[in-house]
Length: 430
Image (cartoon, rainbow, N blue to C red; front, side, top):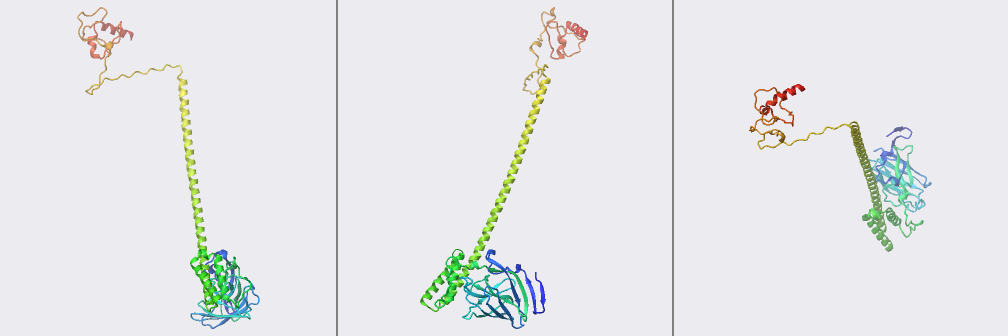
């Protein structure tokens, strides 16, 4: 969010830029490798002529001071920096060997403008151009001049004067590299430098190669780091022979080392992100498997519960049927059970007609007439008669024995003299 306030006394308009706009620095460094700081940026008026800003000490080197003359033109902005009270930054840390001037836009894009090398009197100057119109101008201590992001070792920072022309931007929580990213952990350099026999660029090249090696450039950027090591070997040989190309070889070595270090930082960050993604995917997979296992266990438990309930219902029904059967048995105890009639097999006929009932053997009588006539006991073939009073379909009584007639059609030949007597007795019994 931008808040604009007109400062009539300074002739400036002030804009506050939140930290969200200051994260577009290149290259991106991990959050653990940077620290935040508020910086001031000034938007210079194009065509308004030159204006001067002060360079005030941040406190690391109290005697340091300076100013910068800035003029914004149509396509470029010229910057002329003059610093005083500077010395080699080795008292801050043995890894810091140079001062770098930075121009940082309000959005957080940093531009390395160059190195300010102090003379015997502690003074230094730098005249450069940049395409930026609105930027913050400050000086930091660095291990070599080819770094791509400012360190937290802030030496000088710009500040407006009363007659400064332009707009003032306050960039909150700007990210600066922590000093531990440039520390040499294995073989720190000596506290004193022999600048009479060894140029400062050679110390910077050695420092750059050691920093890249410490950061792991041999593993993450071997193709570039091998060039840096080869360049350092060539520079050492040139220093031994005392040739004129020592400085150029040393500067090329430092630049290759910075490229290897920067690529190492990027690839480390990519590796960290990949590991985090893999861990998140593994965690999500484990959670999904745990959820599926829990659901399967719930389904299995529900199925087992349903099976157990069904088994209980079946057993309860079986007990109920057993109790009913026992109760029926107690009720029917002592009663004579009716005998079931045996089923008779019907004779089969080839014609497919319904078979007639077979006459038992004891009911069978010969159809031939008896020669002796009727016997006194009534046996034998009776005489036929035309009328009788028997109306039932069969006769089932003789004084001796029983006889059944298969059908009513045989009655006229069966019922004779005794028939009337039998029928009379039958009617008398009724």
